[in-house]
Length: 533
Image (cartoon, rainbow, N blue to C red; front, side, top):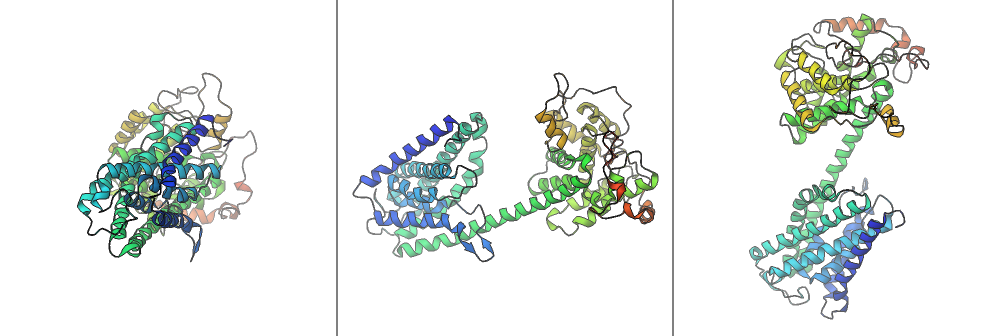
């Protein structure tokens, strides 16, 4: 416990002492139903340990425990002190990732023991044991059947709710003590996230308790756990699949950042701005996630653009511009087989279309452009204008929003611009910090009165340097469209005509792809000029 703040150490110690006080009556009472306590405690311990056992194809997925139906069944079958005792072994065996592991296990055991004791008290006060046909020492006496299942629903729901409230209250308390968070922040959102799950576990625990007290006895009660455990396993598999999706996205973004290091962090910020726009438009759930993916991956096609062009020191030739304008199509080809991206694939392909039809790659107009592509186009241009890069200073957020409004109706969808303006006005613009420059600002803050690039927002970003004429916003660095899709074959022909070192795959680029010497102006990236320069 040496690594914990004193307040956190005191909180854990108090919780442990309270849990021991709750279990002592079960140890001293001769009426404690030890066979039922032992069986339930062993069952809960086994449910927690099974995640460490090798299964066909690997270990059990993370997130499969804690298996609270067994604890709640103990709450419904046993006195409160005995139920608290049942929760201890499984809580102590819970898997932990961060250190100190021993302290975390003790904390989990004490937390679950206190939750079970509180739930048992509530269940007893509302007449739950009588509805199940047992007295205060239910579980030791003869089976009582049939149980009053409708009469037990209300006490069981209240007990599951009490268990949830105690566990989440203790979670919030340890967060506030260990991380010195404000109490309101520490508890914010914990109960809504866990209450439904605890109620479902409570229903499964009630069914287990009813079958336990039935003429079929313990074997029937154990059968109730099987479908519940399978459903938990499937849910954990879903979480593992979702984590794999996130890892895929991170790998693609890292590949873009390595290829084009001068816009590192741009992808995540575009994903953040796209999500703000989508929320303002009323999108939620899975579609909001797809919007975020579209924003993060909008420039993944840069991987297929010669590195020399992305890092070129100086202006691009018309031929080179046409080659860079192929990156939406490259990106679409790269992600076409990734099914979970859904609509994000069309946004990657069309995020440089313009509502007046002069965009690329296909010159779509107005409503022909997919909705998510119109969202990403605005987010892309906004971040390009408000980001400090090696060759350009960031513009103030109000200036960038004004520029977007000026171009609304010609380049951008006015509804998307309006949504971003409203979202920034309501919540401000606080982008994620991922770039190396931003991390350096955190380590070495700017002098007083000089805001660093990691400090953004309408009130925190005064204009830097003399004001330059504001070119039209363009998320691809002012690479103004040269007309509809007719220019694409010419660009591909130009790509084939480039020297070999310009078209080498990533990792095999020739001398032209090397970083410019120190002190020289770095190359212009695909999102740089125009909106960002």
